Amino acid sequence: MNFDDLIDRRGTHCAKWDMMEPLYGVPADTGLSMWVADTDFQAPEVVRRKIHEVADGVLGYTNLDAHYKGAIQWWMENRHGWSIEQDAIFTTTGLVNGVGMCLDTFTAPGDGIVLFTPVYHAFAKVIRASGRTVVECPLVNNDGRYEMDFAAYDAMMTGSEKMVILCSPHNPGGRVWTQEELQGVADFAKRHDLLLLSDEIHHDLVYAGHKHIAMQNADPSITDRLLMLTAPSKTFNIAGLHTGQVIIPDPDLRARFAARMAALSLAPNSVGQFATAAAYSPEGAEWVDAQVAYLDQNRQIFDAAIEDIPGLSSMKLESTYLAWIDFTDTGMPREEFTNRVEQDAQIAANHGTTFGLGGESFLRFNLGTQRSRIEEACARLTRAFGDLQ
Image (tube, rainbow, N blue to C red; front, side):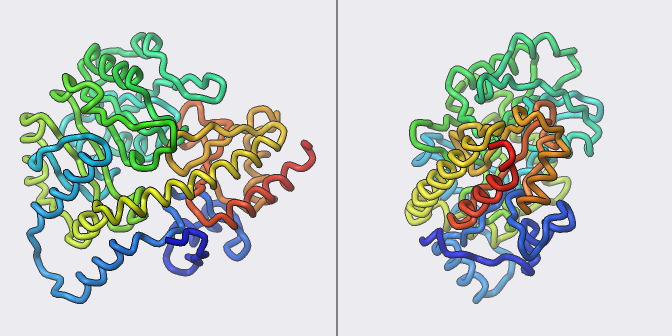
């Protein structure tokens, strides 16, 4: 459980490191990769042990629904106080596939899908790819903290909207939404007769002083229009197994989703199920707690360095390992501050424009890496913007 151990992922078909130069022009040999949202940590020993055990056996058809779903139930109840029926759990090929399946099942081409932007870029991508319309409701940046303005959002609705997608906790801003804010989202969905799709993939990565509330717990009366998304991928760094869950409390919505899954003959891969069941365990919980403590130190070190650079500011993360850095006060055009990060500091970070309205002056930095790399990134950014000192 030593998160400081450097792992060189270059040349391993790793998207995060091997695509850094083609996509960002950051040199593969000397660059730092801080874009894709996976970490540079080994998956927990309990997960790797299970995968080795499975690989030594017969890789045939399996039936581990009760074991796998039971582990999910245990985790959500013990970590989040959220009770789930086994029949409510559906497995998709990751969370973005889960979004696509929900759009396909419950909406039609041309329907408006509401996003609170800036937000995870894959939402808009899959909405547009499915022929639906992205409706952006901009978050309010209140002194470095995102908030919602439901009066403004109410005025934007036209009646063509059929679904609202909430990112909870929020990516890229790191907000852990409060009970009052979640109630506001639920009431907004009710007022405009919208299905509510709540992506809670980062719910295990929450820092001290904040507590994630599952949307189903925030307002139980919303369950007749609620679709929940979870996955072990961010928590345990197993995104490559592409195993996520759509959890649907309402029996009628559940039946519609099950029918669509059956029509497409979609079934989960067994290695992902075995890994999920192993991760959602007391041993997995111990590993997660240690990881969050390590990430907490990373964010504090990175924030301190950013705040020491005139013109840069960091949203104070309440959750996730994704730092959202604002370059507005540098007075630089987007091309200039991006070039300084990519060419001078040789760091690959996500461009804020891909997250929608409100992201234009930002870059997103992945802090899920070894401490030495965080410290190196801080030193490089300090040099790249040294003329502002």
